[in-house]
Amino acid sequence: MFDSLRRWIGQEPPVEELPIDLSIAAMDAAGVDFTLLTAWHGPQGDVISNEEVAGWVAAHPTRFAGLAAVNLRNPMEAVRELRRCVEDHGFVGLRMLPWLWELPPNDRRYYPLYSTCVELGVPFCLQVGHTGPLRTSEVGRPIPYLDDVALDFPELKIVAGHIGYPWTEEMISLTRKYENVYIDTSAYTAKRYPPELVRYLQADGSKKVMFGSNFPMIAPQKALEDLDSIGMDADARERFLSGNAKAVFGVCGGS
Image 1 (cartoon, rainbow, N blue to C red):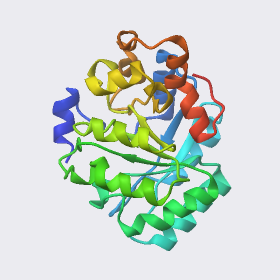
Image 2 (spheres, rainbow, N blue to C red):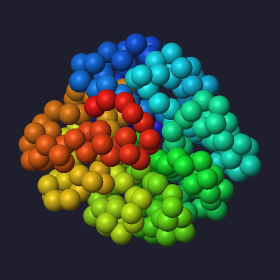
Image 3 (cartoon, rainbow, N blue to C red):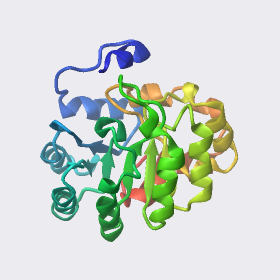
Image 4 (cartoon, rainbow, N blue to C red):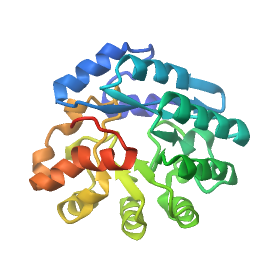
């Protein structure tokens, strides 16, 4: 499934668990003070469990906050697990990968989770755009799938990761249309941002786009290379690198 990612990034994806100290070292090398760690849960079960993420966050509370992942095929269990992660462990959001479940985000099974996110005051994060692994990309198309969600849940903060390419314009249009829809740039280096996104960042998009790396696939330092070429002023750069994430996730970390 991950063969295409190996070709894309030019290296072998990690096959063993990497020590958390390696993540901290990568952050330090890039001047990143604070980041989000996400659990992974798919149809076969945990890939990275919520408990693992909670342990790393507890060990390094000034460097990390957690994003939960839950079992989409059991909605009530998923709602209870999301509540537990937020209320007991202080997680700051829910992240689900539609391609992993082969279910677009407007599928009815997500809807109890959206309601719970609104009640708990945490954002919903997902992947948009083409799928790096060898899985269908259709579920990552912003319109109509994510458009439906934002229309049905206007109070839900939505953070769409991986930009949305090749449907970048669709994704940008949703951030303009809906107050609570955002883009994060995880899985892309600055020099690979689609030209539509660069133009958006140079205009007013810095208010709705936030930086992401997707470590360990892409190290933060690598993801930040060539950022100066985007041409953002100091205020726009601050919003992109930290201000938007602090506001959306309610975290108080540094840059």
